[in-house]
Amino acid sequence: MGLSELYLVSPKEYPSERAEWRASNAQDVLQKARVVAELDDALVDCGLVVGTSARDRRIPWPLFNPRACGERVLQEAASHPIAIVFGREDRGLTNDELQKCHYHVHIPTDAEYSSLNLAMAVQVICYEIRMAAVSPQALEQKWDMPLADPKAVELFFQHLEQVMVSVGFHEPDNPRQTLTRMRRMFNRIRPDKMELGILRGFLSAIEDQAPHQTQKPPGSTE
Image (cartoon, rainbow, N blue to C red):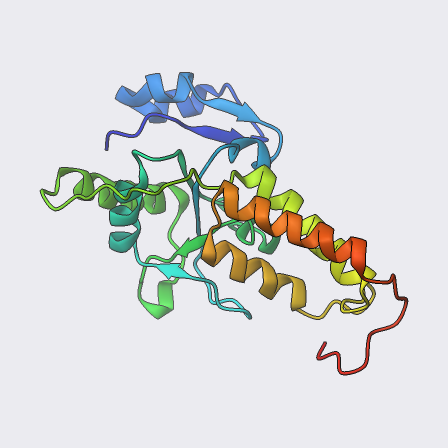
């Protein structure tokens, strides 16, 4: 399907004779695969991260079907690296891993057979990316600043939580879903580097001006 950069996150077996045999004419992709210890290591510099999910979530996340996913990948591919994240064969991606993604992509199978095996899921998504690539309507999205990289975004979320705690808006021992919803909102917005810098500066200004409180301020909605 024209894709060549494969990342393996903490694989149980690599190199693998069985994988070599199954790869057939795509052994060059397998042999050049990059092995990393953590998902974050594979997402460095990625401006768009899409995670595959076969089930509904308690808190809905921005969602693509495979065709829309392929079109968006082609729109942004010229601007920054893009990651399509596939989970484990037996249990998919964890909630924490899915929260690192800007979007989720769901293959709309029959309700009685909601989960495809990993190889089939990869082929479906890669096929739609390929179809978007050969489409005459493929468009390039342009932006005036590069998008913030995943590491910078994670540091922002840590800073955000720190400030929320320091002003008494967030209780670490009673988190509910506030931070998850905040993460979803900013992942949906996908700030660029300058926007993220503005947000970090704003948080620093709050820290400088606001008194450190141990209790929630009056009127807190959390």
